Length: 133
Image (tube, rainbow, N blue to C red; front, side, top):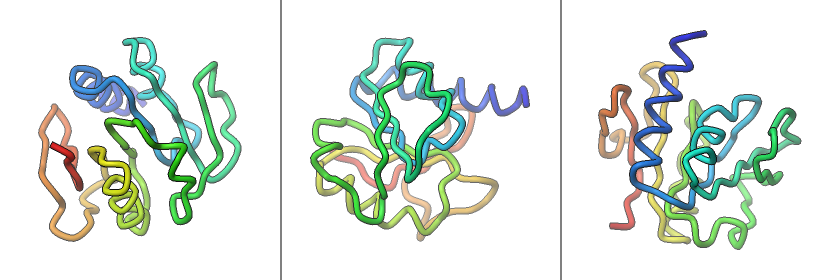
């Protein structure tokens, strides 16, 4: 478990130094990165397809990335997801394009989508599948 906390710390540090309004897609039962971002002063929304237990004061919303409520995401500078299913990447790219935000993904193992996007090494490898800049 400690290696997971290290991964989440590195990701949160990278994001918090660059973004102030973020959405975590598919947060599931692990809101550690979102908690760290909120503690750094970022505005954070956590979304998942089902009710999220243990959100601990984080703003949450039930939403399906395959049919997202686009207005919910407007104004976000970054959409990010940790260990999503690869089938979730195309709709996340479409959403990032629609709202003009960056999209970062931390994949499970060596799983990637397409060409893998732009690689960002922040101590772990993040894949940037869309950049608004």
